[in-house]
Image (tube, rainbow, N blue to C red; front, side):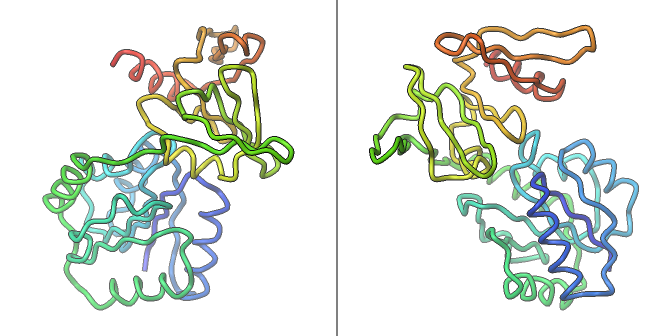
Length: 252
C-alpha cells in the first residue's frame, strides 16, 4: 500500500504517519506535502499511489483544486477540522471523509473501507465533488471572544487586525489597539474566518487584509508586509506564493 499525506500542519502529519504505521506496518508513505504545487508534482511522480489522505484547507488554498488538474487512480480520503465540507458523495467510489482529530478507530474504519473496494476514484467524480463543495454556502465566524485577565469581551471579527500564535497561545489584536487571548488554535481560526477578509500569511500569523499598509521587497527578494495604524511598526515576512494570494484578494 502506497500512501501520500497532504497536510500543512507538521504535528498532524506526524500523528497520521504514526497511526498508519501502527495500523498498517507494511504501508509505504511516499511523502508529506503541504501545498497545491508540491502535491501535484508528488502525485504525477507516483502513478502507483493507493491512497491519498488530503487535508481540505492547506497552505495555499483548497486541496480540491489539486485533483481538478492531476489524474490519479488513488483513493482519496479528505480530512478537515470542520464538517461544513461533508458530502454524501464521499460515501462512494471509496472516497471517505475524516473529521479531525483523526483517531485510531476512525482511521481503521477508513482503511478497511478502502481495502474492501477495487474501484478507484475518477476525475469526473472529483470534479463533481469539487463543484458541489465550492458552490455551497459556508457560514464563517462572525464574532470572537477576547480574554484579557479575568475579563472576556465579545467583538465582531471585522475588528481584528491580526492574529498570532506563540508557544501554543493564540492572541488577537483589534483595530483599536486592544489585544487578548483567544481560546482557539490559529489553524481553527484560519478555517473559520471569512477567507475574503483574512489571510494566513504563515504558520504563526493571520492578517486582516484591510489592516495592511504596504508590501515591500528587500534586497534578498524577501517580501515584507507592513501593518497600518495602530500597528504601523509591525511587519511580517511573506512568501511569494502568499503575496500572490494576497494580491488576488485585493483585486477582487
